[in-house]
Structures are given as C-alpha cells and as structure tokens.
Length: 533
Ligand SMILES: Cc1cc2nc3c(=O)[nH]c(=O)nc-3n(C[C@H](O)[C@H](O)[C@H](O)COP(=O)(O)O)c2cc1C
Image (cartoon, rainbow, N blue to C red; front, side, top):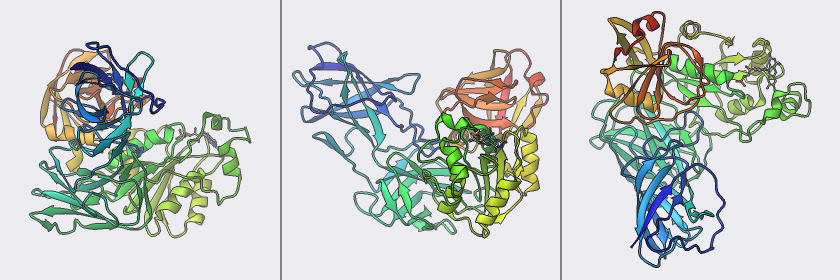
C-alpha cells in the first residue's frame, strides 16, 4: 500500500483540467493533496451573509475516487486558515487523477466516474447545535509539485429553520417542501438529542426553486401546538452552497425576539457594525442584504458620475439591482432596515429587498449612517414608494454608543428578553451582558455557569482557552469595543477592557452592556471570571 498523506483543504479556487493522468508518487513516497471546503460540519454558519462556512474537525473522513474505487482519507489536523490535512492510502499502482471526485462524508452518495451524485436521507440525527453531516463535494486538482488540491462545495442548498421558545421534550423537526428534498420524498426530519430555548436546524436540500415549505416541531410523533408554519409568500431560489433562512418562529412570549429582523445593506461596513449591535441588543435576527453583483471600490469616488452607484442613484427610481434572496420570508412583525445614504437617498438595492419580501402591513424602521446627510429625504422616498408599510420614524446612527442604541430600541418598544442575557462576575462585581444571536453564543450559553481563570494580554484583554471547541464563524470586527466578549479561534474566550482597532478575526459571544468599572474589576493580573445566565 502507498501511504497518501497531507490532503489539505483550503479555500483557494483552483483550476481543474480533467482527464490528465498524474502519477502521484513513487512507491513509498508521500503524496500531498489540498482540497478546499466552502464549509464544514463543525460550524455551519453564514454570519448573516447567506453563504455557508465550515470548520473541519477530528473524525471527519473523505471519500476519494482513484482507479474507479472509493478510498477513505481521514482528518489529520486543521490549519490556521481553516484548511485541513487528510491522510489515506492507495494500493500499489493506483494513481490519483486530475478531476477525480472527492466528497465529505466518506461513502455518502454515489462517487463515480468524475461525478458525485448527491444522496439525501430523509432523517438526520443531531447530537448538538453544531452537529450535522451534510454533503460536500468537489474534484481533485494536481499541483506542479505532485500534490493535489480541491475546493469542496456544499452539494445542495441549506434551509435553516429557526425556533425560539422550543419546548423541552421536542424530539424532531420536520421540513416538507413542494418537491422532493430527499431520496425518498418531500419530507426530511432532524432528530436532535439536545435542547435549548433557541434552536437552529440546518436541512440539506437540492438547489433550485421552491414555492412552499412547511415546518413543524414534533414530540412523540405529534406536531407541537403552534409550531407549524408555512412559508409560501414568495418564490424561493435556493442556490448551491447558500443558507436560506426562515424567520425565527417564536413559540414563547418570554424568549428571544423572533418577530424582529435587523436587515442591512452596507457597502463599507459602517452601517453593518450598527446593525450587528442592534441585533444583539434586540435579540433579533440579523440579515445582510447582499447585492448579486458586489459594488466595486470605485463607487467610493462619489463625484465620479460613471460609477455604478452614481448611475443607479441618479437613474430611474424604478431600478432594482439584483440581490441574493436568501431570507426565508417576511414572517417578521418588525424590521429595522439599515443602509448608508447614497446621494441623499437609500441605495436602490434596499428597494429590491422591500420588493422581494413585501412587508406590507408590517412595521419597518429605517436607520442609516452617512457622511453628514440626514435620514428624512431617504425616509420620505421609502414611505411614498411603499405606502402599505407601517413606517416608524428612523434615525441616523453614526457614532451611537451601545447605550444610545439600547435606549433607541427601548423607545421603539423593542428590547431583548432576559432569557438571552448573562452576568459576568469578577472580583465580587457583577456586570450585565448580552449574548450574541448566533450558534457560537448559544453553544457557549449551554456551558454556563462557567468560571474561567483568565490571563492578561496586551493591556487590553483577558483570555482563557476552553477544554473543547465551540462552533465558530470568525470575522474581523474592525473595532473592538470595551466590554466585547469574543471567541478567538474555536476555543479561546476573550473579554476586552479597552476599545481599539483590530486586524484579528473573532466570533462574537456577547457584550457587557455597561462596561464602566470593568477594567478596574479585571485588574492588571490574571482574574477569575464567572459567566452565568
Ligand atoms: C456612492 C456613495 C454615495 C454617498 N453619498 C452620500 C451622501 O449623499 N451624503 C452623505 O452624507 N454621505 C454619503 N456617502 C457616505 C456614506 O453614506 C457613509 O460613508 C456611510 O457611513 C457608509 O455606510 P456603509 O459603510 O454601511 O456603506 C456616500 C457614500 C457612497 C459610497
């Protein structure tokens, strides 16, 4: 047997020239293969962007086809960029080829002759918030140095079904579509062996167009009262690799804020930062309005009348630039709608969003960031274009602190329920904190109460590595705020006591609501910090 080592999964897109034969190794010499996932099982998350991301972990096995047969490659280790090394062996005389199919997990689906046929079961077991076994597939690409690489993509689309106020004893969630979504029909069931108040379920479904989904929570074979919901307000385009979100279905008046959506278009990130804080403070769903074709940096030159942004804003008011429609519907009572001011008005993609999801009869509250322009002109145009929406007066939120934002939300009657909050205690002093509305924070919340011996770093943070990993979806927040509670990598809990700009990426766990006195309480050494609900 030849030893095949170092199958590295990375994110670069690589050219594949199918059919070319490559003899990967002289007998006994190791061969390296690099393959790139668009996502992994350990943390399927889209951070609001609608695109799946993934993190490899031990126990992951790949199927690779060589010489017409399927071979198993096992996970070795994960690289800092999210790629991973896999190892396997091939019989003597067997070679890998450019274009050879590779898929995760091993032996699920029909891997043959340069193609991967997706096999979708009708039931999945789920052992935890981050546990699911979706199908990822790609092809191998030979590198000049004899190694192999590949990108893996989710082999279908993903329907995310979110519930809050999930009753204890819920033993299944059921998704039924208007066409086949598994090998045996239109209904797929996920059976969780875990429970929390807010639960997200990720159903793999074939990519394509759907006009109806029905979801329901089950207990002992019966649908739980009030949990059944039909989504059929709009034609839903589920693209390969994208995560399509249902509005959170709230089964309990005392949990979450399932009826509130924070939707935001942001070009340079200013409005998105505000949107993230608003969603955390409100305990609301967060959704990024993403144009089908991204705006290039040239649009930052406001005075250049040849740019796309200028042409759209000064062109016909009926322009509706395409967006990636990955929100699962308009089942929200209230929408906080964020955008930057472009030439005095709301960018046209905001109108595309409102056309796509039809919030007639719902409450929509705009918020903006801008260089200096106020919100009134943009607001007036939105109100006259969508008179059926119950518009509430919006705000320009440049430079608003989280206290300002909290007060604004309170004035709107939107405030997070206490079930999502936590208390951070250090040296006998307690601080109220919000938990982020993401899988990472929910997995962290399941660990509470938790007491950590934290270590000092850089005069601005205290950190501690957990014994296990949490699902993570790191992004660069740009700015760290005093009181931010973040996850670095997949296991390092960090609490910041200074505000500064950062180039590092984190997944948000939460935020100390009022951090005054936090720095003094944490001190200059290595404090013991307790986190509790
Ligand atoms: C194409 C374009 C047009 C803009 N027009 C205005 C404007 O009319 N008035 C204003 O005060 N700021 C204007 N700005 C500045 C943005 O509104 C401001 O930087 C905003 O915070 C950007 O938000 P974002 O980072 O979420 O995209 C414009 C920016 C761009 C890129």
